[in-house]
Length: 162
Image 1 (tube, one colour):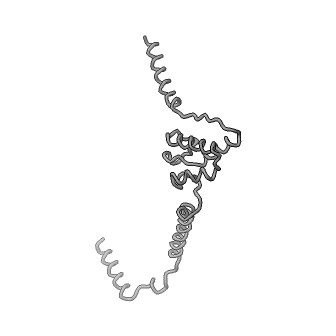
Image 2 (cartoon, helix red, strand yellow):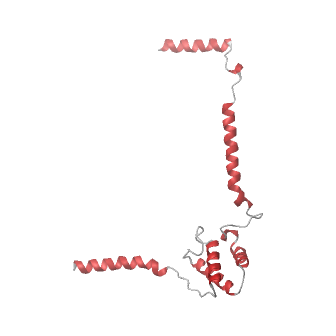
Image 3 (cartoon, helix red, strand yellow):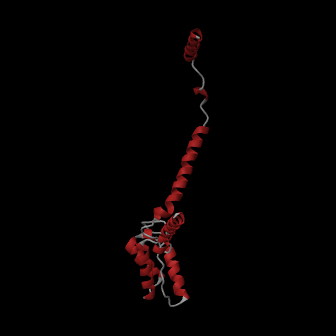
């Protein structure tokens, strides 16, 4: 009885473990030649999955990634160039679909924003350091006669309370 239960539990865990593998999409496309296969692999690595956001469509198991892979295969079969395929995807999904978006008016902040923020941070840091290093004017450190007298009274008052 115990052995049968152990086998059943083991079978259940094994079945659950393989369920994810069974769902994994395996694309089987027939290419005309190795150059077309290489172009397909390059394009699927170059384009980002719209759903996964940080995964290319070659590695994504999302249904939309499978659709995009199928679309790329179809367009390659029609003889479209890599540029035409990428432009089609950008027109459909926006610049986000590319890992390396083209430099244009809409993407300049994406390309130069981090550098601008870094330089801005160094400027702020330099200003703060300069202000702290600035010498204090000589006259501002000395107390006037009235201030010294008042300080002496306060100190004397403090000593008498102790």
